[in-house]
Image 1 (cartoon, rainbow, N blue to C red):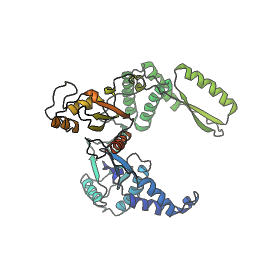
Image 2: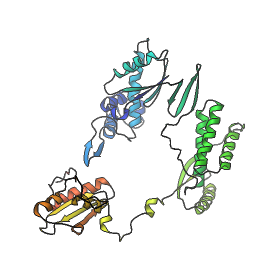
Image 3: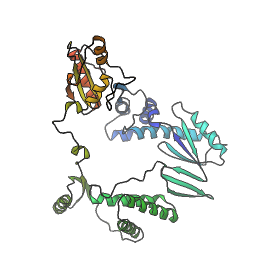
Image 4: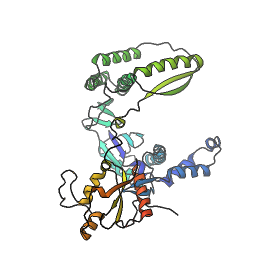
Length: 414
C-alpha cells in the first residue's frame, strides 16, 4: 500500500490550461439551459478564478497562477485538472510498475502495487509528467497506512479500516458546560459515533473506538450516563427493522433564532406549532446562534487611556520644532511609542539594538526630546487593510516632515 499526495495542489494548478479543459469538455446542452455558450462561460471562469488579489507585508498583489486558497472554485479546478491528466498517465504507464489499484480524493491518492520496488518507479513517472505537479509518497508501516482519517490495515490480503488520529490530536472538544443549545452537545456525540460506525470495518475496531470516545467525552465534561444512553439509542436504531412509510417529500426551510437559554426553546416551541398549522407542506428546522462572544464582555471602556488603544493611525508632533510624523500600529499605542523611544515596553530600559525610528533619529540629531503626550490618535480601524490605507491617505494629505512620503500601501488616486 502507498499514499500519494500532491504538494500544494491548489496553488499549483495552471489556471489557463485548466480553464481551457473545463470549457472545452463541458457539454453544450448543459450550457444551453443557462443561456450560455463556451466563449461566455470561459470568460466567466477567467473573471472568477484568474483575478485573485491578496495582501502581504502591507502590499497588494495579484496571484499570477494557481487557484487561490479558500476560493469556492478551488476543489473543482483541482479535480478537473487531475481527472483529465491522470487518465492518460495511467493509460500510458508501463505495465512493469503500473499500480493494481488507484483511487484519488482531491490531492490524496490510495494505491496498491504488486511489489514495493514499483512505488518509487511510479512516483518518478508521475513527477516527470507535468512541471506544475509534484507528488510525495507515504508507504505502509507494519501493514498499516493512514489515509483520509482512516487507518487501513492489510491483514493477509483482507483490508480493514479504523479511525486514525494524527499525533497532534490534543483531546480537546466541545465542552459539556459550553453555553450553547443542548442539542449541539447531543449531536457532537451522535456525530462521532456515526463516524466510527461508518469508518470501522470490524466490530473490534468499532468497539475500541467507542471506548476511546467514551473517555474523550468524559474528559470534556460529559456525563457517563449520557454517552451510554446515546450509544444505546444509536445501536438500537441500527438493528431495529423499521417499516418505511411512503410520504410526499416536504420542502425544508431553516429558521435562525438567537440563543437565550430556556427562553429560546419556549419561543421555538410556539413558533413550531404555529408554522406546522399554517404550513404543513414545509419542514422547519430551527438553528440557534449565540452572539454573546467573549470579545463583547472584554471590550475596553470608552474612557480608557488613549495610549492603550490599538489598530490606530497616530500623529507625532515635535514639541520643539513642530515637525510631524504619521504612523500606524495594530498593537497598543504605548507599545509603539516605546519602540520610538528605543526602550523596552515591559521594563522601560534602553534596547541594545532598537529598530529604526524617524522620530528617534530626529530627536537625537536635533536634541529635541519628546514624550508620550506628543502623540495623538487620528483614526482607528478594525481591519489591517483599512489601517494601512488610512495611514497612506493621511501621509499623502498632510505631507508630514518626518515621513519619507512613501505610503504604507500603493494608492491609485486622481
